[in-house]
Length: 117
Image (cartoon, rainbow, N blue to C red; front, side, top):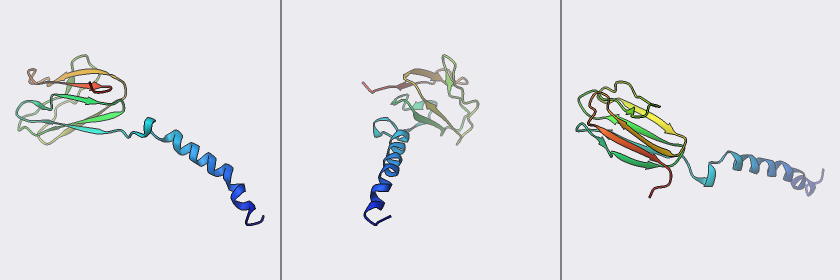
């Protein structure tokens, strides 16, 4: 094979490689994000977060008391989170997900998945 023919022979392989990379990339070139919520002062801070489908929310307990992150409609529950412990959840689909602390029901929050208003 001549030096001139080698690049032409690699062109189909290169095209397949580029298509494979594009197929595996997130839609629109966006990457999944991680949003952090602190549990502090017997509250979720912030209490309302807006994310995109595929993003992750991480709650970290900064209180001296144990708390939970429990969906009001079911679907997720962190179990007991002692001080310094975290819980993470990926939200794959659009929707509004209200939650509370099962031990302190006055503590409430909501994750809104979709485009922000």
